[in-house]
Amino acid sequence: MSSGYRVMVGVKRVVDFAVKIRVRPDKLGVETAGVKQAMNPFDEIAVEEAIRLREKGHAAEVVAVSMGPTVCQETLRTALAMGADRAIHVETTKELQPLAVAKLFEKLALKEKADLVVLGKQAIDDDSNVTGQMLAGLLRWPQATFLSKLSVSGDKTALEAVREVDGGLQTLHVPLPAVVSCDLRLNEPRFATLPNIMKAKKKPIDKQTPESLGVDVTPRLQTVSVDEPPPRKAGVKLETVQDLVDNLKKGGMI
Amino acid sequence: MWASSCRRLASVSSTQAISAKRTLGLTNRFSSSLVIAEHNNASLAGSTLNTITAAKQLGDVTVLLAGNFQGKAELAQEVAKVDGVSKVAVIDSAAFDNSVAEIVTSAVVEAQSQLKASHVVAPASSFGKNVLGRIASVLDVEPVADVISIKSADTFVRPIYAGNALATVKSTDAVKLLSVRSTTFDKAKPRASGAAEIVTLKAPEAPSTPVAKLLREDVVKSARPELTSARIVVSGGRALKSAENFKIIEKLADTIGGAVGASRAAVDEGYAPNDYQVGQTGKIVAPEVYIAVGISGAIQHMAGMKDSKVIVAINKDPEAPIFQVSDYGIVQDLFNAVPELTKILEKK
Image: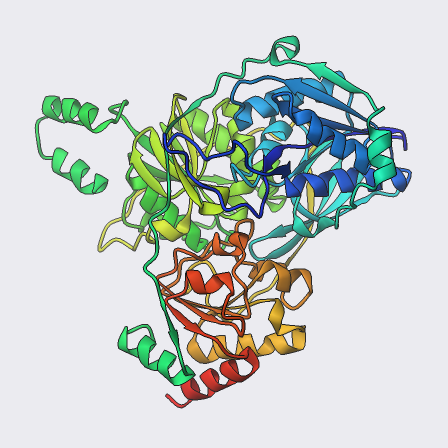
């Protein structure tokens, strides 16, 4: 793998992480109309990592990809403003579940001859944490998920990746081409500066559709209902730490 | 509720059983589940026992035990004695010394091709999450991740938006692939007597495409209870201000016999290691008692602990969002409250 490799990054437009979401009255989803949206925080980390790979001279090009309705282009413009070289919008108004997203990415990765696909660990709306793994499986490429550190091997044919797992950390050697997913501590994403936001308006966004890529995106999961979780009983404030111990003992907790 | 319905059916005639099973929503009279065991070759991870409990609701349980056992049968025998397990399928191969997702996936796919389960079930741990999607791509199914409740053979409840909404979804795939949260399914216990059948499956072929290589694991062995299954958790946030200060959290946890957790902010700042992180993208816990110290209560943190039975919050900011979910709130400086609490508990 020469230093001219191509990195593809996925970016998803989601409800902003700070928003207190509400379930829709029809109980088939969460209210998103008129609610603040933003790039999925894990995808910001993915874009940042891809750009750093280019800045370090490992990658030649960073291609940002987003899938969904027209408004996804705003998210792509953010990625371009952060420093992605060009973008691809897979436009559709259909519901895209992770398997369909992975299949679309598979087509794009092969079509664009990507050497590395960098995705966020999970989208903070769906919280599935499966897309990167699915894409790696479809491509039959090595995978490294939940990354907290990424570096390129001396001969540039592989990555050295540190992953955060339940018991601590794992270090993997990952031959390229590969798919990786980014965790919180991988990097701190840069803010897009105003000059870069202006420059981004001139960068190209290619259009594709599920039909042009030959992928059937029919959802496999039907949403039966979306409900609020059961509410917790209101609690009390206690004056002293001794009160706390007494209450916990009374409840048989300690 | 499910399991007892199925047990009652076992005593009626087979025709009645089949039609009753259809009414209950089981679409395949031979419903069976394949549990992907999480282990370290020597012992089973606790999460596997919670997964077995969930899988019991979906049909006869076969546990896939794939690892490098070097011919030793002890772990398989231990699994065979777990209540609810009908069969243990063992794949024993040195290939599992490199226990990366690609290798684990090939074992699961091989086992599934031989066993043809209607449901394939993994724990929703970092192990399970690492492989769920990859297995899904090979089986060409949409996985259902982080299931907290099983409504029927094809309908599952899972949290979305950091657990602020619960989605009930129905899978239309022929094989249902899911991961289950340990917080909502109890650990399966050992049987009173008897043991399940143990069978050996042939190992899958070595992969024909490149795979990642596990170079090292930095896993801390602790004498403390495991965070995801501890009865009591004491968790520290950014207000601790340093790794040195964070020790008061550990001291309280040790005094009370609990596990130690941390907010994302505390981990980011280096006050605690990453495996202490509780939250939407860290560990999900639901202990009897969760003591949140110096944690403001961001949505993302709440996602990881709001199903705890009793939540205690210690924070000097009376407006901290954590007080909206806590059962007992103490508005005090943690550097006074925590040592005082530890001292009182030490006296027991």
